[in-house]
Length: 363
Ligand SMILES: NC(=O)c1ccc[n+]([C@@H]2O[C@H](COP(=O)([O-])OP(=O)(O)OC[C@H]3O[C@@H](n4cnc5c(N)ncnc54)[C@H](O)[C@@H]3O)[C@@H](O)[C@H]2O)c1
Ligand SMILES: [Zn+2]
Image (cartoon, rainbow, N blue to C red; front, side, top):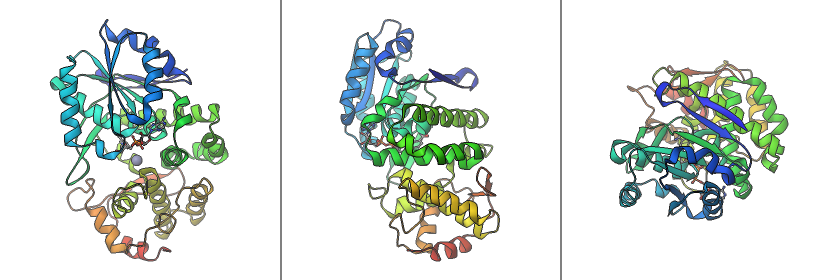
């Protein structure tokens, strides 16, 4: 088993990673239960894993099974979930278990942040994206009319249990989208990990257990390090995790946050664009930008506007970016790169120049 500590003072917790962990969950969770039943929240696609987890707990549990999909991160679902948790008599000292992808993790994290002014929760992430990104770090949210993730709270889990074996049932496209967030850690500040990704991505995506476990553990350790330095995204360090997300957000908005472009696919194209733009500014060697694009292409991820199926003008895409919540006081911070593993936050980017760059991209 790999154990990655997330060091946040009184809010510190472990991320435990091991194949088959779901079936042995009781060893890790029973000490938290104090003889009380667990409530597990999951979605309909995860009934098989729910049964494994319930058997693995060895103690009684209730389950709440929600509809899969982004629409579940809503006010309506939040209200109904908190009512059901209250009906089940959940107390502040109880631990609600979130078994699912980022949708379930974000919703359950927020529901438990506000339930009785805060109760405990455990993340058991089942998508690659949730295992390497959303389950660690304590950002929780639902979507509102004004946009995605605009209503939420920082609420750290008490424990994160990752069983890489659950990825066996995850559709290949979802796996690839999650992989974009894995390679992101290499691009941010870890050239050696990017090289590992180039050599091992195919094995990882084919389900090789050792490659999968290494990628997850390395990604979680990178995220834990950044979150420990800047839990609430105040110093700019945590913002590095948004590499590719400003461009990517524009592409996701343009496709209506639909299944036409999954979040990770938008991030992949966005990272390629961030590197291409950095090269255009003369910050980053052109061959680094091409190397990033080539790697994304090799594993079937979009490497730019054309591959992402985007035909919108640069002006329209920049308009989408301006609606992003990360805009602070009229500026739009961009994550740019001086090379692979050398990402930095630039608050002086000229939006007219970004527009011209996007207009010049192949459609
Ligand atoms: N809190 C954060 O820091 C953070 C970070 C990144 C993303 N997010 C959020 O995460 C969400 C996206 O998460 P996601 O990509 O995990 O999507 P998701 O939770 O919608 O899961 C994707 C699909 O895969 C299914 N699924 C999940 N695990 C499966 C498995 N093991 N086998 C078969 N099917 C499975 C789900 O039912 C769903 O249909 C977005 O709402 C995003 O805003 C949050
Ligand atoms: Zn992301």
